Image (cartoon, rainbow, N blue to C red; front, top):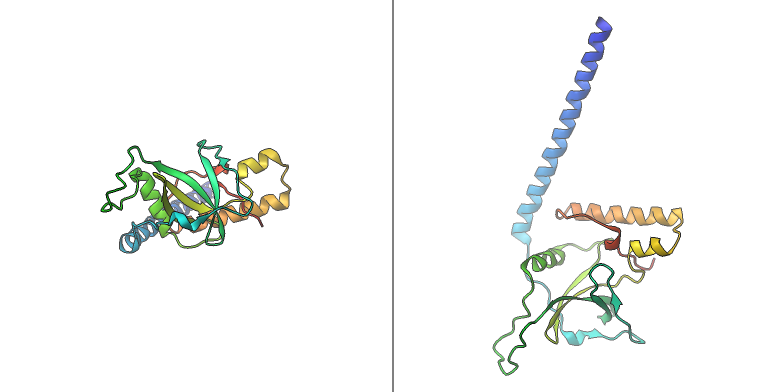
Length: 202
């Protein structure tokens, strides 16, 4: 009987500690999210960097546009301040503006959700494991997003084409974890798929 009571007490203690641990995790997460939210309200800058189209140069030897497997949009490789960058279409202007009107300096409207996401990217600190967003560029009635260039494509393309060795897999997994850890300290984000993991030359 005493053994049975002892087992019950042990189970009760385990459940109590488990519940306590869960509560601690939830409370800590809520506190962290609240702190980030308050910090964002104070420091968040909704203005996205604008890039002069003249600063986007053709890379040496030119480049062929790469078609994104995710949304079928063409991604153009350019040179921006000595760095290879990827230029992605964000929005297209439906009605061409009157070029004689010099008073208007507004860029082509982009969806508010997309603008919010890009503004968040603009406010992230620098991390070697999160793709760099340089800003927006308006050219020929279109708005382009300028991002860091991933020379090796994405993770899905890599494992569909090649048999990846385990040391390489572990290195990729470690770098993904580092990127996710950095993002968790800044904002809440959605799902991460292999097509969203970009691979740079290492």
